[in-house]
Image (cartoon, rainbow, N blue to C red; front, side):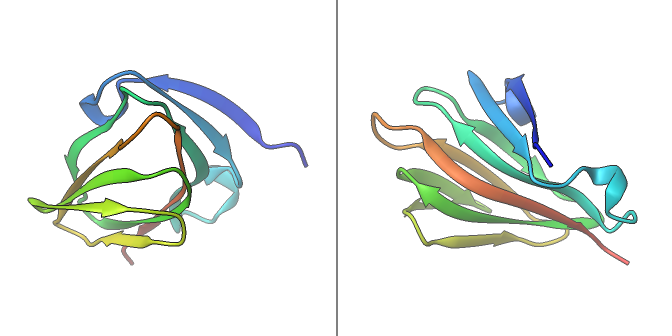
Length: 111
């Protein structure tokens, strides 16, 4: 199966563009998963601040470095790091450096 690739601009109100490589399509995951994709976020771009309702989102950092806003607490993220944003919480992410930030994004719906 060849993953579908989509370029999105101003993700969640952020800046610039990101490339989404869908590892599984949402329609194939029985309503349990809102997103399962490898995301490439380019320097100068960002995933804007957003709050999750009825779901949670996990990022697994594959390459590059980033600045992650976890409910107002800013921290650096690097390859191998995992972030979790629970139902009712918010987050934001941007590359920190000259390299793209590549990560897996997984959104799980609450039952």
